[in-house]
Image 1 (spheres, rainbow, N blue to C red):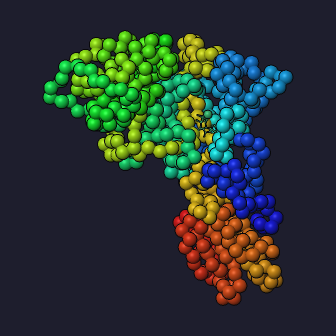
Image 2 (image 1 turned 120 degrees about the vertical axis):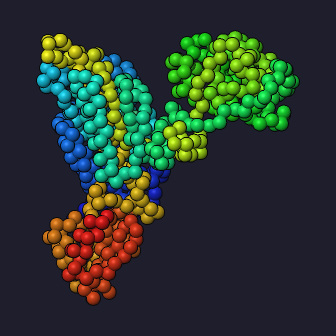
Length: 564
Ligand code: ATP
Ligand code: MG
């Protein structure tokens, strides 16, 4: 392709609204342009990458027996009302004004609608149906470019089975296909066992990449592969120390001491000698949560331990519940359920609030002094703590979800009445799975992982072109002719080449643009080398440079691409 004829509106400056690296480079490289908040147009270079990702996905989905569909994005609202998800999606769902239609944020309902009409017998199952289709979600904070768009391309697939055992097989096929897809795309990813959240169902896994642009925080152990969202991650840490003799309870006057740090300073003690109190309501009954020192309550874990519908107590409610304000609340004499973090198990001679303003109680032996005390893992894992599987130190970082696989079970087939008939004529709901990949998000995440200060660095698998041929000084006719000859030589040999044939662009501009656009191999055709019948070949990723004879250029490039 001739660069003079390709629309690549590169930018020198970083656009104001772009902070995430992939967003900056996709805009600067003329790969995308914004149309509105969270709405992007893909320009020719960007769309080439999207199509390459789609092809990899198609090949791997077809390899597991997936059949490609194309479902409408414009959906009758009444179908979505069958599962109650118009309400569940709330403001995230786009509604078409004055018509009973919605724009699909995902396609479980539409797949189940078709399955209800066409699948009758166990003989027709299993099925894997997939599509690569635009989704619409009115994301409240579209940012990070195409990582979180309001309109985005998703590969979504749905498995239909007669039993949970065969669902496990369909799920595993997807798990394997996803590992191949992301591996072929060149992504360094890891897999997190996740909770299925609003989608319903039982097992689910998220495929993630580490990125500062991520909105999820995960704990990851590279040596053994343990990975979990910090909402559920666990670690191995020492419990608080138990002293040989438990003291009797005693009151300590602590005027104006509110926080754990103030308490430790005031009494000159270590935070592990204290038990911090947090008051919650669970279904409107007060619950005292005890944590060691400054450890923070992880509300997802708390909810799991005591049931859903929790909320922190408001400051003005505390006195009524405990007799004291925040900073002076503790387990001794607290009327209501008390639950303590596992780290406090066995703890004695602890200091906590006295349920009396400006007083703390010392000598607390939790198991001795607190009736019906329950323990649960309630704290958030921190970096450096030991992995629960292999004891190596955990890393904690932000990450982006590339894909998600769910075992839906019969949530949708039940609510929409999609049944099959078994061997004996009995009717059962189809057992389903649902599996998504964000196509443009894969592209952005690749850039997040593969760039330098000059621009993007594409892999062979995703690059819009493999080779960027830079013709220099093309105002000189013999140089234009020589560069064009090299272009034709490469093109005729079947290489994918972008030829920077711009007559007016300076060499420096061409070098900068080539580094920004990120094709894996650059061929620089400059006057001095051409005079020796040579060109310079540069590997974008490593910066390695080679002088290569034009006659042997094709075989040299083949060998190089083979290795990349
Ligand atoms: P997130 O937690 O990032 O909002 P999600 O859990 O809502 O993701 P799913 O409903 O599982 O995502 O969608 C499947 C895939 O679609 C995701 O793994 C992600 O790659 C992609 N995706 C989801 N929302 C967006 C979006 N707003 N823009 C781009 N891609 C998205
Ligand atoms: Mg979402």
